[in-house]
Image (spheres, rainbow, N blue to C red):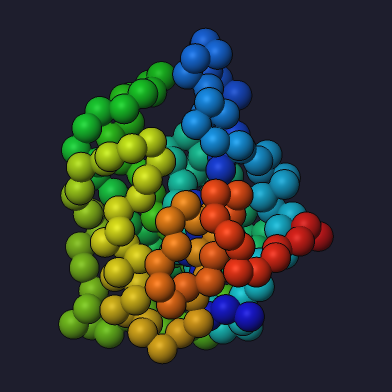
Length: 171
């Protein structure tokens, strides 16, 4: 069981106007129901850091609830480059924070701004800074990265692009 869960679910989108722009051209996706049914191995006192786009914000909160976490706060990642979008061209992504049981926020001296700026690179790659920040905040906690693409030392991983260190089943 894990104290810290860091997850970037492979959200499925259904509004691509052309086959060439589908997310599935980048990686396999999952439905909201499939994501919600994952049995996340979190301790009774734990924290979840969950990535969600503006188009999947409500779904991200639903996933958080289904995994047993209560929403607490969020960070906005300003990617510094315009992306796609139907109403607005997306330039940011949310990192939602939720807790289960009693889990402390980081020490006051380690807290950062709720807006983090770093230029995005390849599709869906998240800033390494965020995992490093979580390590600084909770150096002695057992950590799991779900839907991982590039493992970080000291973290267990689960995803279809890495050698899994654990197995996660559906409910």
